[in-house]
Image (tube, rainbow, N blue to C red; front, side, top):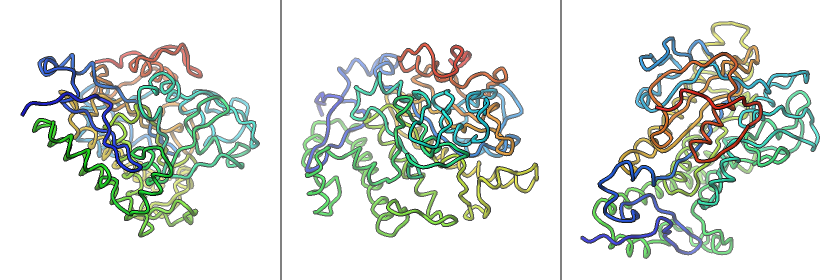
Length: 446
């Protein structure tokens, strides 16, 4: 079968629908691209994501004993076994501007506000909030025009922009990590259905309402386009298209079930101690992010798994006490072990995300190969509220530019923002400085 060339920005269109496609061989400019892996890799987009987990970690069960490529995964990191060769553990990084620096209590608010900005948050519970521009938004300003969405902000907690939350700090600090400007946070979306509509809707609200009225799958409205396209594809691309459409439908069905049966409640506050199916919520958000990257709907994203200071209990893994309460463990081993179980649980879901990315072929590698994904927290030991020796993972090869499969230890109190400058460079985005940065982070490249 002769393959017809199609543009990279091809969409399957229908009523209220604009379904982006994953990278196909037919999108390559000519058959010559199949002969050169390096040339193909250069044409593939790079993605940048940040995943935030709250209340620090039990660092004894987080930090590998060995430095370099020959290291054993500790208890918390064991779920990463299948992707150990696709990531780096980074020790020694710090957020000095998350410390009090004369402002007193409020470490949870500062941890979140500083995580991507490296800036000292203004201590206020009023509307005169101020932090800094976050690294994701610096990247989005440069590369966002090349995609449908300049950036995608996700959370499993509904965003709060008003009110006081932590020792005189506004809730906006604690529930947002992405900042468009020093005074403008980017509220994340916690409703998977709304994220799905944002990714695959046409943007025409009237058409979306009409489509919802029919109560059909989003795929029902693009079938004609899909059939026409399939006839012009080679066998490999036909198989890839079928797998992609199946994954979209499966995700749509999961969202519909959760809305129907109340697995995820987004229009009312879930009572404390009744988390619902928190695992499913996380994995839906991770799956949506995979699709967003796979279809090049966006190349920049941030995801708050839970806001810092969250006191969510985890009875489904045998931890009935609140997360924040446990983080003040007083060095009691049973509490530290409970924290480690929570940390490991979050890691299991992150490993799910990385394995999904690794399972998607892109060019001569995988989707994960073309990502740079930072996973971590703005607090190290929750009992001390310290902001150095942070728990940080960098996953993906950043388009074959980053070293992987190793534990790197940097000089104590190295600014985390130095890492961000290096990741921006890798994205082709130049910034002189982010927050408290002092230069680029060395030894990241392969």
